[in-house]
Image 1 (cartoon, rainbow, N blue to C red):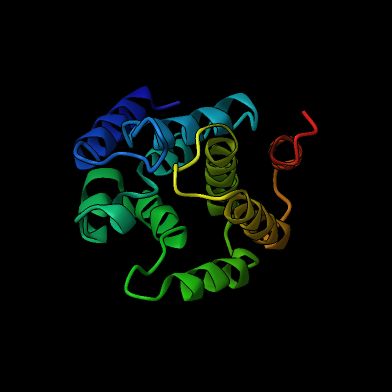
Image 2 (cartoon, rainbow, N blue to C red):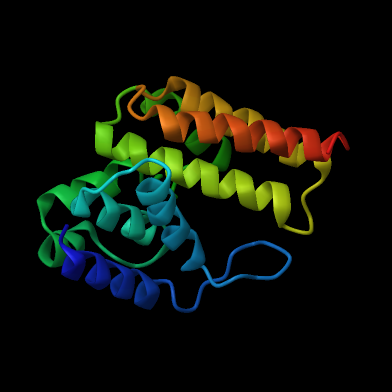
Length: 181
């Protein structure tokens, strides 16, 4: 594995997201999210492809920062840029349209982008379950689980361990919201 590529991607992502916070109650540093996505892919999914893990670390840089795709390509190569672009939402579209497109587009994702999408949704479901935005009602949180599940259900089946873990965290999140655990 190319550890230099991963360290460079982690540093780049931390720099690009340096002024951003998650929407959770704790306003966690944003970098925690891409780091967790890469860790989930490595630890649970047993992904050891450095370019996929680097793209996981960088997956929100185009969407949530002023990073152009060309900069990612220059720094990390064509494959990393393409993986990041595959999982990037078009922020110029209304939120509901973006959500619908994620479901529709999921079936067309490459294996690497599917892995990143799985890690991203697992990380987000964990946040919505355990440390949600303070303004999110139980209904909104349940709607998020339903939508995340629709996205993952439409993804190609590429990693049974990550898919199984996603099911576990989404079911646990629902049970927690319903007061069953």
